[in-house]
Length: 148
Length: 175
Image 1: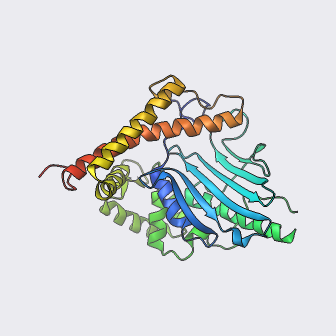
Image 2 (image 1 turned 90 degrees about the horizontal axis):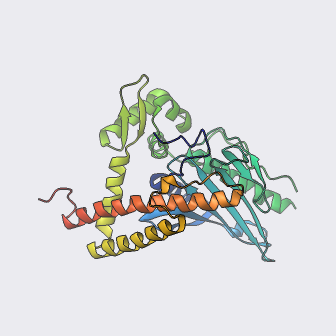
Image 3 (image 1 turned 180 degrees about the vertical axis):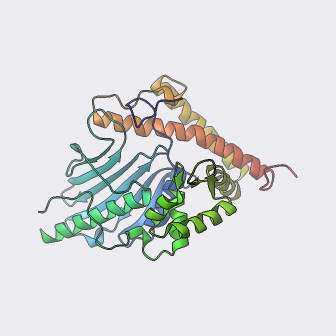
């Protein structure tokens, strides 16, 4: 038997989870916050899902925002949120789950650079609940930008 | 500015993905995101319905072939039926692409696979060490690369199934 990646840092990431990426795509397309979704490289081989966030809902200093989503058959994932600002600077963060020697398997890369990681706890790791949490957090971010 | 909260409590009782969805759709969606067998009660928890309702809908999905059930343990465990879903994906590829397009794409994927074999100096992606590196960024990059590599190997098989379907007019077995 292969070593379980949940128990150690050995093991291998699963291939992209086709069904979960398609499920997330179907659901994201019904979100008012999301204007467009796109698979990389294409719908026949979903490896990475780009979700374009509606920049019109942000103050005008923000020119573009997107979420890049990977989901692996091992239940690991990565939700990478990137804001591009008028002055070309970026504000980004990442919700991640994967084995590593530094943090809990489930962790969050803090904004604005998404470099520093802290442990994260979620009530459910089902893909639909994870994506809901991420979009709730993005709504919180938009609100705090307007309050600035 | 208030500090960014990566896991805010949902403001409504319904999670956002559940809004406007009937119970059957919620159970179906939850099942599609499940990669290892779990009992109906847990699926009911995520889908926000009663265990009996979840079980009724799951049994219907089992009849349709979309979900599989293992009856060995108590309680019974449900998971999405990968074989059926792979066949569905292959069927769509066979339907939308020509045999020539499928063969060309497999050729491109074989080249991508060869590149990964060179890059990692291995033919089996599961033997590559991914998570031990000191740099978190390196782990991310290697994880994405090895996952794509495994995806390519799997997708070559998927296209092979699609080619057979396309050549047999959508049938698995020649008429």
